[in-house]
Amino acid sequence: MSNHRASHWLGWSLSALAIAFFILDASMKLLALPVVLRANAAMGFQGPGMAHLLGALLLGCTVLYAFPSTTVLGAILLTGYLGGTVAAHVRVGDPFFTHVMSGVYGAVLAWGGVYLREPRLRELIPWNAPAGRGV
Image (tube, rainbow, N blue to C red; front, side):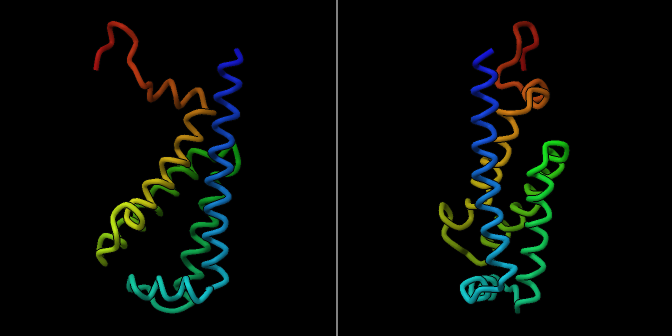
């Protein structure tokens, strides 16, 4: 039983870290900070209006992710958002491990948190199949 409790709390810790990161990122976009506007312009996203839109989308997905009843929906939407960031960074030729993969890192953090705290997800996607049910 303590193993389940540890997994649950580790999952919430990872989720809290992801939530904090996404809220920070969304806030910077909503405030249309100069560093955000410069980075967005380099990727072809012009003006504070685009920064506000991206920030609102990220914040909305993060809010859904933060509530247990909508966590999976939020994680799915965050995955789509982060996939867009990967595509945008690839399109402009940004460095792979720092910029391109940042969306993948965020998605792994978010889904890792859900996976560890949601037993139904662990049943749906087991790391190792029970004997006799090979892959």
